[in-house]
Length: 314
Ligand SMILES: [Zn+2]
Image (cartoon, rainbow, N blue to C red):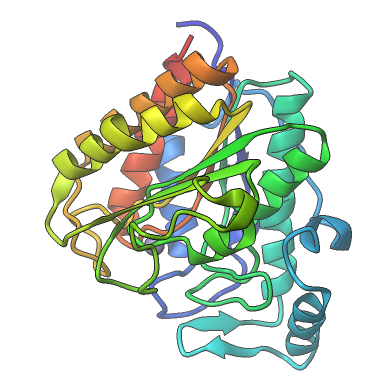
């Protein structure tokens, strides 16, 4: 096997933001770390160093007033953004590092240092709206990364979101932007109760949003049909220069929060499908950004499987 070329943004610093018994907690990162260590996937890779996202990077997506309010809550010792979304004293620091890692992955790909990267960070991001965090998410990592790619001159960016929840924050960020195509498969009706098939974008962005709601229990077959029958043709028409995956693994059948019933094998097929799409459309350029996934063993296996497939790509 040739030298793996997939870069990982992996750090036990993402075991900060200790939310205790909440489903989105540091054990997710620890489980991934153990699995990658056991499969010897942590060594012999290109390195991506990263720093915390700057205010300039964050405010391409988020309102400055929201960032200021996060700073204030953090300084006050923490709190709750909503009944699901905990802020600890170090949470903003961890969230800024997660966003910064996604930005650094973009720089590494655009500078030609790597072709593919997986950002193994938490807290997740895709529910974070421009003006408000929600649903376990403080800063929208994938949106900040996509906005960074646009700021660096990438003309068309696609985001494929297979987290079991609709990425309402990412959709809202780019709803009227024709340069960022957002495609989501998600269980419906389900939290956050957005992502109807009729939501297709707004104004100049009309047509650059694709929502594929799926019933509970739909399983691998429905996810794969969505990918090959709807997402792939839409991206072929759109012509992205870079593809992101909002890679949540809470559609897995072992997940305690959702009921979509996907399997390890289903996620491997989805992963190969986006690798093939990126190869066909944008010279392989593909960045996975971790979102949800609340059964740590299933999450860790699926992430490790994805990295092995990314490594095998030409
Ligand atoms: Zn989710």
